[in-house]
Image (cartoon, rainbow, N blue to C red; front, side, top):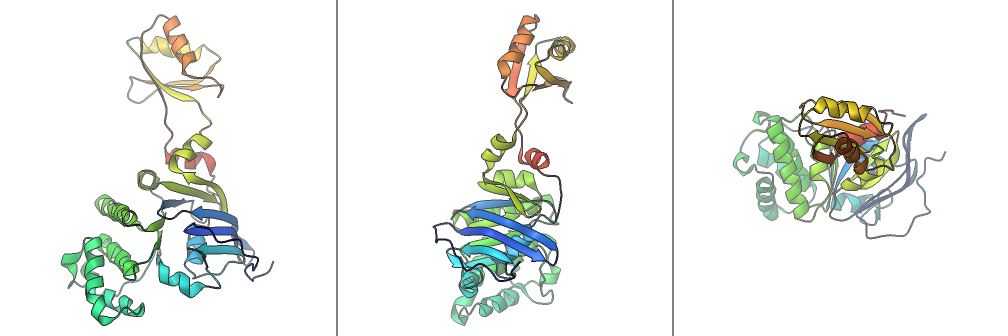
Length: 325
């Protein structure tokens, strides 16, 4: 297969990021397999997959550090291969592991990178003040980076990719290794950046946080796309089970017996709390009225009947196998 990217380019759209048939080989290993992905302007987009699924390869191609074997990727309409310089001006990339100059002061470190982006000396001081205020580290201007906590160093890394005011942010595991408080602070910063109009793609293994943080997500495995769309949509698309939580006024053991006797019920098990029964129906076409009928006709009083909501982690475990290429 040719190592040259495709020159048959698709038409430009208003999307922030698009990939078309994006493929990347490392020798005999296929890290990405014809990935078609669209991220809209203003999205806070969660990029989900097991280790080795192709997330970092995708982000490195979008950030122009890697070239695709075949296929095309665009950032705000600019091809990541033929227009790499334009892409770098509008994009900020924070890898999962990045080096910091620990013997430099915070302002020296940021001034160095601002100069690399050819921001004039007169403007750099205000730029540095602005990004430090945004990441909540204004009081650490004169501190040595090596003396800062891991969470603060992560925020300094985020400040570094913000100095040239990029429109698109690619963040590979930005909360990796952070304690719970530092993760919460990082997520709050990302929400503020989205409010300011940035488009953010964030790769993370902390799915519970992505579920509340992101408006859209993509799930990839073995370099291929499984799902891309709204967070709510992933649940409705992949939830194969009709499951409910059931409460009765008394005699919960009798309620369990009644449910287990019926062929319409695949599973009836007591939850850890001891006051609810988790009921899974055998037929996905059935609904909660079946459960209500069983309980009421059995002479018991129904006090609760609510659908079981699948979270993003449940869906991820259901639709992936943790396989890599």
